[in-house]
Image 1: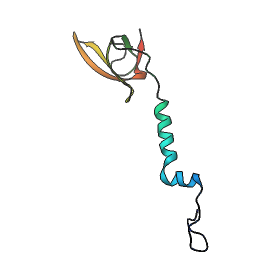
Image 2: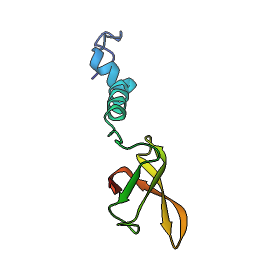
Image 3: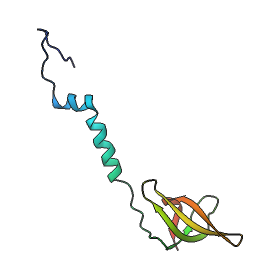
Length: 95
């Protein structure tokens, strides 16, 4: 799209071109992706089972939920000691 017409004077730009130029559409898409994050359906203190990874089949209590990073911290009993383990939402399930 040209910004200057034949006479050397600026011609009006379409709204879509201005938004593309300013990155407005990218900002809108980013906001929509933030809104569409999956909700974590468990709560603090709830006991869950680890579904996958090195701690698969262990169970533990949720001590922290980080919805921005889609992670949860679970206290898992390893060799008789409570150890905090950070997992992704998809790695845990209800007992």
